[in-house]
Image 1 (cartoon, one colour):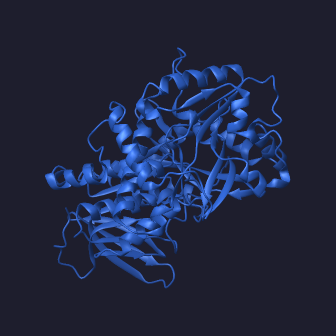
Image 2 (tube, one colour):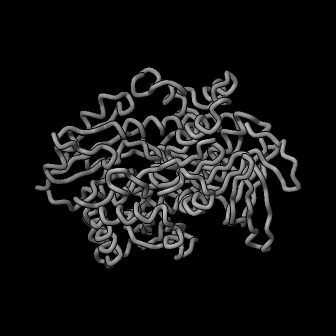
Image 3 (cartoon, helix red, strand yellow):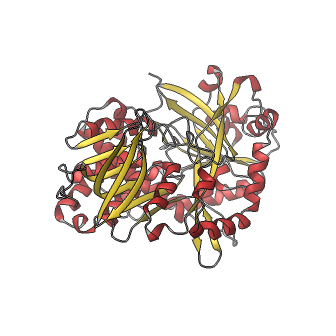
Length: 504
């Protein structure tokens, strides 16, 4: 583990975290639990934590656990359902809940105790082919203990009791079906992130620098030298560390490119903006209590999966529908329109061109989304709420996502829709790129990052014991162990108080 043994006039930290989002907060908390003596410096360009993708009004919030997200369970050419990704994500979310329960038991912080709520997760489809797909998906998933308790129904009377707004005014001849997982949750990742940074700031050896933008980072003689500018005063500061994590959301790619590590070659980013329809009628909000995910239109990208989403934000129940995709060259909601052109370099030019040529349908889709009128957006909403009234909804801007583009030996370049950790061979620096389901699986991602970047320490009995204390299922397979699934779920539900949503 890095130590403060460098003779220098510049401040020295064991660990530098760039970006004050859910990833940096999770990594910082884990490392301080593993080694309380570590010194950690955190740099954030905005004046508050979790203001970009981790914020509840932007992208994060569902608590992705593969209960309702149909894009995680594609249908194979032979008609069978591939549930491998769903199993992985469901297990990762259980690991997240275990770590959050560990924090809730160990610390008294308001944001930690109120960030998660029980809310059913549902999938809803119409059309006979989609009904059959959902039936097969349900049959495949419920063979695993991770999806025990999932209900499937075509009974319109039962569906009416589950999702009255979705069923009212619907053509009675239209084939419909839904699955319901009562174990689902709503997660305010903004609140959780700010709660973890509150804990971190109270620990010795931790400094948090808001309004600081990292401008340069360079490794010399095994040490990373970071230059950051105070955006409020213009003052430039320098700090050194042996380990750096770049968790700056859409801002990670430009910083990764500045690092100069060979592992960053060939990576590019494709930014996608988003919008929601936000319900403004309390009577409508009160009649819907579920996260209802549909099926993306044929040819649409995974990010376009529409959902009618109940969320608890700042103690108040909200209802969102979307997302409606758009295009912006910004990598962050508060970024610059020069972000995309500025990220293009000789080493990633070919992968970006090849990925672009292979994703022309995505470009057409984004153009169509950008050109949508208010009437078009309401028409999409009415596929889920047939009796929706335009005056009950207003347009709200969501966050920016930057999808990963990377080199591919066969295709030249591919566009990825998940998350990607890029780390140097010596483990001294790592960056997280990509989007969904990042926030929900942050614990699993950071757990693997720690084991990769600090392999010797991770193998010690002390760290192994701490891993198991933070995440009791550590080192075990949840999909293969029904008793363990029941055990960890009973504990996390009790500790996190996963009761039905109650406005404060």
